[in-house]
Length: 394
Ligand SMILES: Cc1cc2nc3c(=O)[nH]c(=O)nc-3n(C[C@H](O)[C@H](O)[C@H](O)COP(=O)(O)OP(=O)(O)OC[C@H]3O[C@@H](n4cnc5c(N)ncnc54)[C@H](O)[C@@H]3O)c2cc1C
Figure (cartoon, rainbow, N blue to C red):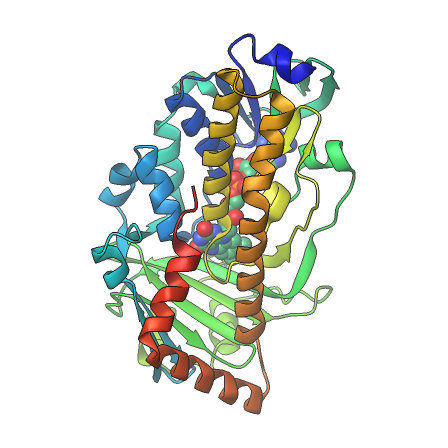
C-alpha cells in the first residue's frame, strides 16, 4: 500500500552515514534527479589515514556515475598484483592489463581514502550532506520515515537508508543488536613515503602475518598488514620499534626501507577484522547498504566496492519506484534480490583468501605458497577467475 502511495510523488531518501556507501548513494540519486539528504555524525569528512584499493567493479560504478575521471586524476592505476613470500621471493603475478585492454574490466585504481571521499562528496549538492548530526530516534510510521537528531532537528522522507557502517544504528533499530563476528586477526594501516620505489601492488605472505604495499601516487605508499591475534588480547602497539619487531620475519629490503621511516606507533591505525552476516536487509521503509549489512574481511579489497555497487543498484530501484514501475516494497525487495548472492560470493572469496593468508604453520605456509605459485602459472584460468569476480554485474 505504502509503495503505491510513494510512487505518486518524487520519492525522497534519508541516508544515515556519509561514508563511501552513503555518499555513493547520494551521488547515484542526484544524477537521477531524486532528492536525498545524508546525515553524518562526524563534523567533517574524516577519512582515516589509509589508502584504498578500488577494484575494477567499483571503478565501473564510478565510470557510470561520472566520477571516475576525477578520481583517477590523483590515483595510481592498479595494473598488477605481485605476490611474494616473507623473504620477498616472487610467487605469482596477476596482470590485469589484458582484461583492461579488451574492455572486459575497467582499470582499477589505488588511492588515498580522502581522495575517494572528497570525489564522492563533490559529486552531490553541498546542502545534501549534513555533518555533525547525531541521530536520537527513528520512527517508521506507515507512510513516512521520521528521524529526530540529538539537537532536536527533525527529518522526514519516504525511505530510510542505513549506510552507517559496521555498528549501524539503523540496523539496530530494524533488527536489534547484532554483534560483528571477529575473524581472528587484526590489521594495521598507514601511509608513508614510497622510499622503496614500489610501482605495483605487492603483497608478502608470511607465517600468520601478511604485508601489502600499495602505491597511491608517485611518492606515497599505503601499507597494510594483517596479524593473527586473539580477540580479547589486542596487542597494543607501543612504539614503531615494536611494530618492526612484530614483522621481523619479512626480510625483503623494500619492507625494511619503508618501515625504517616510522617514528611513532601513532602513525599506525589498528583495526579488528570482522564480518556482519545478515539475512534480512530491509524492514518496512528502511533498508541497509554497505558495511551496515555486510561488513567483510578486507582480503580482496571489496568492502567499499560492494557498498558502491549496492548504492548504484538501490538508486536504480528507487528510480523505478519514482517512475511508478513498481511500489516501494517491491523496489526494496528487488534491490536485495539483485545484491545478496553477489555480496555473499564476494564475502566468501574474501574470507577464504584470509584463511589461507593467515596460516601460520611451516608446512601449511609452504603448501599455500606452492598453490599460489602454481595458480599464477595458469594464466588463462587466472584471467577468467578475475573477470568473473571483478566485472560489475549491474
Ligand atoms: C583494514 C581494512 C582495509 C580495507 N581495505 C579496503 C579496500 O582496499 N578496498 C575496499 O573496497 N574496501 C576496503 N575495506 C572495506 C571498506 O573500508 C568498507 O567496506 C567501507 O568503508 C564501507 O563503507 P560504508 O559507507 O558502508 O561504511 P563506513 O565507511 O563505515 O561509513 C559509515 C559512516 O557512517 C557514519 N555513521 C556511523 N553511525 C552514524 C550515525 N548513527 N549517524 C550518522 N552517521 C553515522 C560514520 O561516521 C561513517 O562516516 C577495508 C576495510 C578494512 C577494515
